[in-house]
Image (cartoon, rainbow, N blue to C red; front, side, top):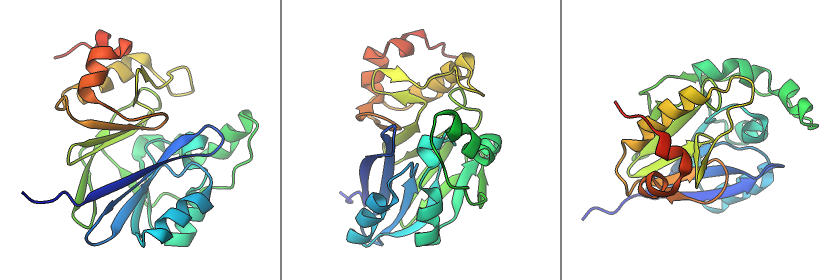
Length: 215
């Protein structure tokens, strides 16, 4: 049996403990940084310790707690920044968004890649498919690769992302959950906050998943 080259590390960072996920190919050491929300030194210390060559920085969405360290990580790695095309209003206005919460945020660099549903992102042998999952925000995305689903703030262990923020929509997030529910039950979920889970566990125990309408 061929060994899975994927490795990942989940680091809660920043004022709201958003999960920054570093995923990399153990063979080539090429990797991705997903949602660097804060504490750039913590993130870079891990990247440098593992000798990872960062090929892309991906924002599952542009709320300030998920993008706060983007400027530093881009400067240190030189990697392009990828955001869904429908998230650009939030991305470009994130400084004002953070101020509403009482936080000061450095200006973000321009997005280098505007993502769409179905795009494929690569690093070494890793392949992640972009899933547009609006509801928590207009351009929220999840990433699926080799049995792992990185869900941002769309789906958590036992809960879902809030829909009362600007650009949120409960009806849309329920449609996004139906899209995620189609993955095999053993699919591992790495959410934007909190511990990991599986699709099967969420379909069984997450109260929001009981209201999913299929078809």
